Length: 234
Image 1 (cartoon, helix red, strand yellow):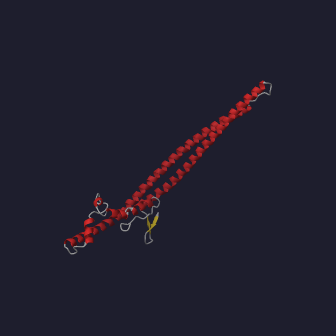
Image 2 (cartoon, one colour):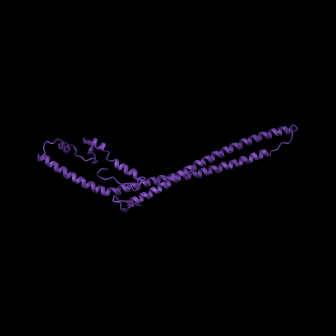
Image 3 (cartoon, one colour):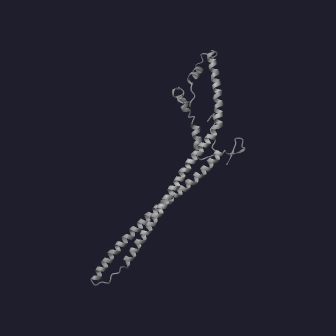
């Protein structure tokens, strides 16, 4: 798998993205196989229904043949033509054949059901492999992003310390916007328990900062080349 850099130069995908592409290919094959197995299972069920209907029809013909033979025998006893059991014999043979067909159809249905279950288990496992591979890509993408975030946070901390000095030295004393910023935004979002008591928590929630990450993870399930979000701008 090859990817294009922003400048248009071609580069080799990371091992994690290569593994994700293989997992997605496996998932597509397994999903297709599971769908085909479900279709075959449905056809197997139709074969059983047809065989059951054939057996019921054969049994009805057999019962009718029994009644016809009884009537023929009664007529023969009264001086009519001799009764023949040939029709009864054919109907009984048809019933036996219909029983054999039903047993064969049920055996085929059992085999198809087992194949469907196996295929569905394979498809479920393939889905898990895609999720795991996508997680590995996310972790691999976090490395440079974390380094960028650390640098940005350090710059922010240095800037805040400078603002704090300005406030304490009264160089910019009395600025309400600066005072509100320094007094309210004590905690950064994402700290354990920090944002719970922060008056800016609602505003942070409206930003939907996790949105780009949700979109990234969702995209990775179908596209191994999906770009990771940046620290600035999502």
